[in-house]
Image (cartoon, rainbow, N blue to C red; front, side, top):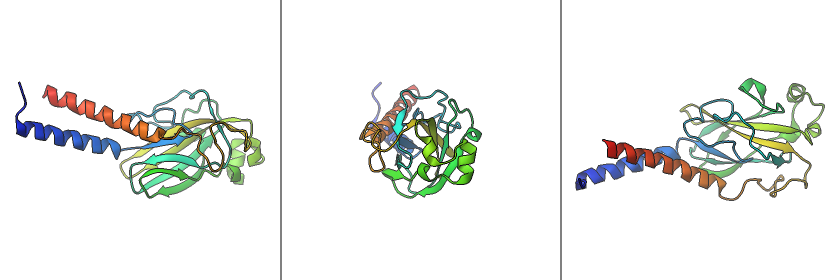
Amino acid sequence: MPLSSPTRLVLVLVLALAAAHAVHAHYVLTAPPTRLLDESLMVQPPCGGASDVKQPRTPWVPGTDLTINAFHTNAAFSVYVTLNDKPAAVKDFVKILDTNVAKLGNQTVAAPLDKLDAGALASLGLKSSTDLIGKSGTIMTTYDAGDGVLYQCGDVTFVQAGAASGGSDKTKSAAAPGAGRSAAVAAVVGAVLVSVVGALVL
């Protein structure tokens, strides 16, 4: 049965609200690339529901800024690192930064892995930050805009400057351009499809 005009209007409004909610409900770690982008699993520590390492690991120069796509104008953001081959909990990581993300869209966030303090070095079993070179690790990020902590991880291999692929150095991101936008669009499309199915069933 064809939908009446008022019903169609309500449906459009519902879809618009669902899409807006999807866009503003998360962030995307684009460099290093996130293991997994699943809106329903991002609340699961330590890596947003992704327990397996994403292969191949991304070559990463210690000190390179992270790149994220943020969908809130004010969020607490933290960066952690581990050299554990398969971290299973937040306690497997060492925190290296607490900061605040105060704008929307694609942006960089400092990740001073080249300036680890004595406590972080001891926890990682290192004597200096240069000892990261050649080791595999996982960078965990957390994002809290007031509606709960979200988690995403990126798996890396630490390399010297100039040795990274994909232009990953202290000025270039290892993520492909537009990766964050593509992931965000996918999340929005998923939310809209769920809303459409729900509306048709009702």
